[in-house]
Image (cartoon, rainbow, N blue to C red; front, side, top):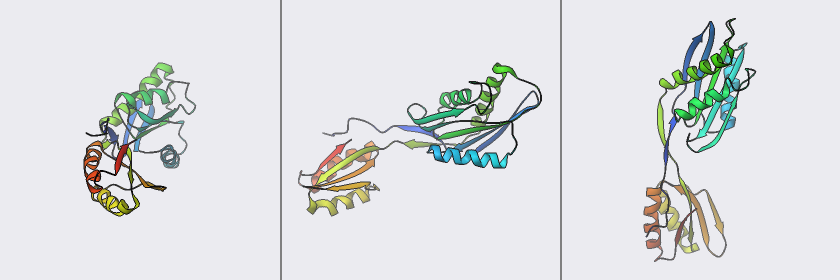
Length: 209
């Protein structure tokens, strides 16, 4: 019987950059979307945007790292707009549209007409939403961490079996036995739970973390 008590989940992630210009009472809101997998990557894009669009009134942003339902990290910034009128509405749209691994930046050029708090919330939200309408997506399968406990004599054979499954060993520990650490989709892990014990006459253990 399989030891895997969970299944791999997949989520929608941004696949390519997007640009969309929204206009509201002479102000322009240039919405830029970028695929990201870390805060550092998002902040690098932000600096790039500031270089490409110098002198803007505001550079508001929001991001979701990982899936929108269970994100690894989320953050946002109003960048000088009234609190709660820019970054949070942008993040709300990303969450509602399930935009995983997505960094949204809006470059605002003030047009001389104040929009008020409600108008800003609508404008920033609309700009992100309209940019998402043109987005391309990919499905990301979340991997399950597992370890394999084997004898020294079996290490080479087990590593070869993992390689056949296109699995990279992330780390190894050597003590009384060898422990290999890796990640795999649930369907592959279930197959390994059958195959690896057969290689070892039942002595090897595959344990999902």
